[in-house]
Length: 214
Image (tube, rainbow, N blue to C red):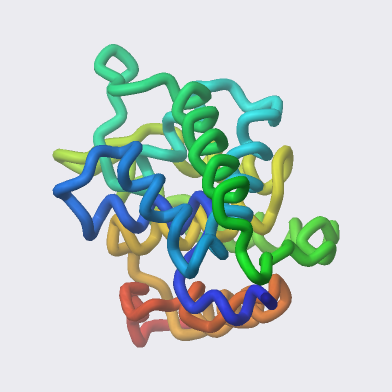
């Protein structure tokens, strides 16, 4: 299966979207449901993202910040429901169980272009272009405040994977309703094309595109 055939956000960024739309399941049950989506087609991409973060040099605090920002949940280092790396390990176990139990008929693989330095720099430029707005929306939120979201996203792009970093960046924009310009929207869609996404992965209707100076 080509990634363009996955018409919803996939991998770890896609899992964070479930947290904004399904409330009757526990986090682990939600991961199980996500891994089962599309007859198991979702499990490999979710496992891959989780493994990349789990094995990355990022501190656990950064992983916690990224998760909280993507699901729009207040970051409180003294009141955490789970250690970020422990959570990633549980996700990996869920996905591997799904893959063993019901190997999908076709598996979506990442495109090697995701590691292209030019793509990495392009994603990094987009994150930095919205740094002020992102910081105000996340760190400054009165109820769901998350500090250091911007540098944490930058570290994912630079140290882990620009593909995952771009999808998490989009998810934070959607979670906190950060307005973007039409030209930024156009650039995001172009980046999505280069990463091999279905168009609805970039914009599922929740990006806040505002007609303003470009």
